[in-house]
Image: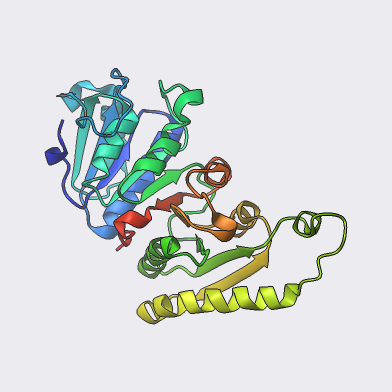
Length: 301
């Protein structure tokens, strides 16, 4: 299999027959149907322990009709009556390497948060973590299906004021606009205990109200341009002093999608490379879209 077998701008979903994989597949089918894009189902057999995304997209593709995982996946697509152009791929290769390579061609890569994986967890973490860190396009990780249906909930986006967070904000606005959803923009500011800030037990002499007002002004300014571009999207700003993970998870309860950027500063520093992202991906109860800044955050239209 080569990248030439993936249609440009398509939706790619990794399947392995696990329950979370099936949830991801259903989300991907809906995404392809909503955007009018072709859908590619990729089952990587993980027989090659390749640890770099510079390798080829799998060394060999076998007939999909002989792959029971893909047969079952195609049955799910057929049962959804999606009328989506769908191509299955059975690949001899390592799942993260294959999906990361596909991300250079696709507009979105979708996968479940858990599955049947041969990756040593201590070495690389989960497939979802690894692909989300290294993919070239937005990656949607589907953990649980606690919404009542796609588009039934709101969209949540983490906003930290950095340039890197802008693609994620744009992605969230585009998705909310196309699904008719309201958007909640979450920004957290200074959440460490005051004792740490002051260097001891003495109360911090600063003005928390002034900092809160500055944060509110910052967020309003960052969202103004996007609101002009998507005037039909109803936006709620949630600016609070708190733990970014706790606040994002709380605001995303019942949401259709939680969108985060790949890097940032302030409360969201190290969103992909540190503990914050992994806590989000492991604990979120709705799909999570990770949008890399380097790609410009391809819009969900």
